[in-house]
Amino acid sequence: MIAIPSTGLFITGSDTDVGKTYIACELIRQLQNQCPGVEVRKPVESGCSAGESSLLIAADALKLRAANRGRESMERIAPYRFRAALAPPRAAKLEGSSLLMSNLIDACSLDDNNHLLIVEGAGGFYSPLAENGLNADLASALQIAVIIVVKDQIGAVNQALMTIQAVESRHLTIAAVILNQVEDIAESEMNNIEDLKKHSSCPVFHCLFNQPLQPVFSSTLS
Image (cartoon, rainbow, N blue to C red; front, side):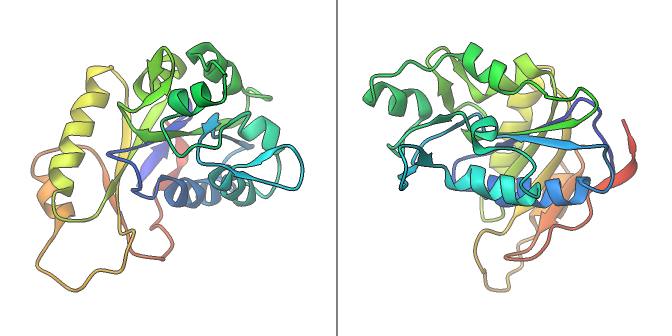
């Protein structure tokens, strides 16, 4: 297990559709009984659907809110929401909006400095997040530890190592790499955890399909 990073956590992926939100929710649940408080942010979400009111429904942010026991409003968790299922700056442009990195940095401020900040990005570490920046730029601006979520499949080691290198190039701490089974897979000789550990010293955890994430955190702060 790893110590709880006192600076917070930025949840990123080796690609899109690797199960970042599922893992983020699992981490939030694990941290609730070990921290004075947890604040969650999905500062921008695209691919939102229309609700009964004028506000768009952000499915991932709703899951994060539920995992944190509804302690924050949706407006606080996900202030920037767009309809098109595209990279956020492209989705914003289609709606005549301009999304800047400064907007997202401001959205990730804490309401209580004693709380732990959990931020989920959008897409992979180098995916565009704003007109003038990537997920990598937001993580760098926030200076919080990074959790890398990788889909547990053939090619996972390559994807994990490339993302590890990208995060390290920004001089950010990698709290852990989590191999996530996003679909039920047949028994095989594949062992991505063992193979990844041969090439990286990062803590590696595994989450089985539709199962709770194994305990990640010790009871101490780093």
